[in-house]
Each structure stands twice: as C-alpha cells, then as structure tokens.
Length: 180
Figure 1 (cartoon, rainbow, N blue to C red):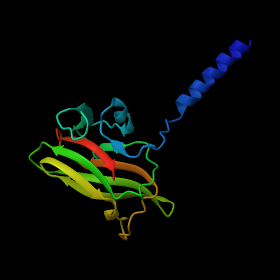
Figure 2: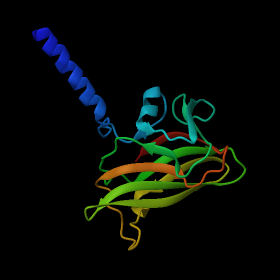
Figure 3: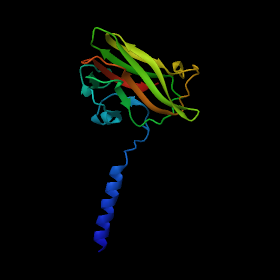
Figure 4: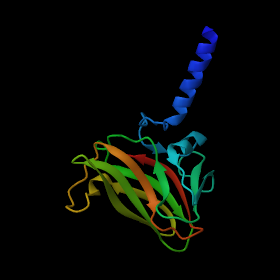
C-alpha cells in the first residue's frame, strides 16, 4: 500500500511541476554569451519568425558565434533569460556583430527595469551598418522615457537586442556579448 501512495505522490508532484513555468535564476557568473556551448542557446528566448544557430563564420571569442536569421514579425532578436540582476556596477554592454547586408539594420537595446513600483522599458538605438563591428554601449547613456532621468540599473528584469520590423531574410551574427 505504501508503494502505491509513493507512486501516486510522485505522479502528483510531476504534474504540479509541469504546470509551473521554469524559473531561471540569475546567471551567477554574470551576463556573458560567447556561444561556445549549446547550453547558452537555452538562455535566450526563442520566438517564431527567426532562426538561431551556432556558427563559425563570425567568431571573435572562442570557436563559435551566433547567426540569427529573421523571417517575419516584430521586435525579433535576442531576448536574454534569467536576468533579475544588478547591472549598476558595470560601465557598458559590449558585443561584436556582423551585418552582411548592404543596408544598415536598426537594432535596439531594450532593458526592462522597475521605477516607482512599475515596469519601465528603457530603449536605446544601436544601428548596425554593413560589416563587422565592436559595439560598446555605455550604460550611463540609458535614460528613462519621458523625463530623461538616468536609468536605475540596480534591478534589470529583462534585456533584449531586437529589430523592430526586420526585413525578411535579414541576418546578423553575434559573438562575445558581455558586461564590462
């Protein structure tokens, strides 16, 4: 009889665990994406309308980078999981990017922050001209919409590098995304 209860309890716990979304803890090693392992891809939210693959054709750190191909949709790009982190001790978000198109790509940095008890999206354009680029976004340049006050980065809830309305077939390559 006790074996049946144990099996039943395990079944109930399995069902309950499946009903709750996976909560990813903040990365204890910091915000670093160099795409050397498939596990790093699990730290990025996947959306319909784009394709991701580790790729060796654009590498600035290690042996792998990331290729993102945009098909259709809005605000597509890299959406990093499990932040809930304090970025106030860092000076910049840094990454390497290749734009193989002949036209610039209008990339945006979006950070989700709390301000006065409300979620606020702070955005900064990071246009990517054709070619290879080392981008360094000074975090002190981030301002709240409306009043332009400096953004409080002591609790970053979300971070995204997105294209608002990508042209179908657009590709970008990324590597070595990190905070300094």
